[in-house]
Length: 111
Length: 114
Image 1 (cartoon, rainbow over the protein chains, first blue to last red):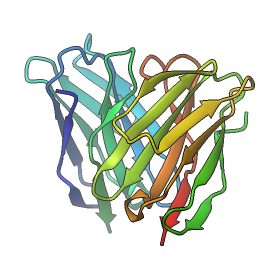
Image 2: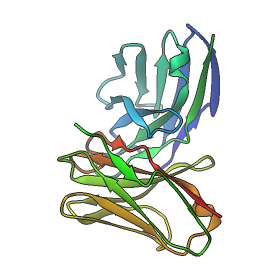
Image 3: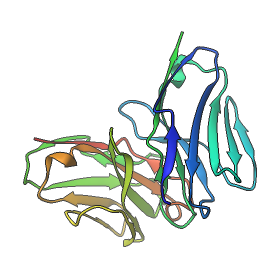
Image 4: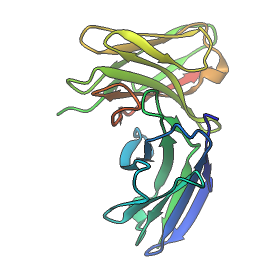
């Protein structure tokens, strides 16, 4: 119940294309859903986060879509760039315990 | 504002030894969490300290322990190292308790056990 399942494990996208990463959860107590971006040799950095009172949140080229009834949320990267090549982690928390992370998606954006 | 710092950045130990890793949180942050990152298991939560008290603990053996000092700096210790302990150990700090506030990660300590 504490798991967050993330897919795909790896993703190759053409420059300018849309990258889509999906996550699913079981615990209905989760109420905070952040996405982290990690470059090699660095720690994860918060990219964007959403709470279940909204179905979508957009920040620049990054959008989180949230489907509460399906218990799924996804990250969309519009106009993907080579600089977006990194590992992306979704996570979830019920708000009073630490984040539970998905296993990560390695994104490669090729020119 | 300085970010989360971790020392050392790289460490090589042999089986059976023990190791201590250090984390200095962002100034003013009272919560420090530790995670183990491996290619197979991803990011797994070890424990969280808030105002010098362990607030949450993950599913790791007792060989893994930690503490937090009055200045919020934290250390984690792994005793009797095993090959499987080779991983990137990440520290994250937040103003409020983990899960209730944005966590900021340090660059990690890469531990290799031979």
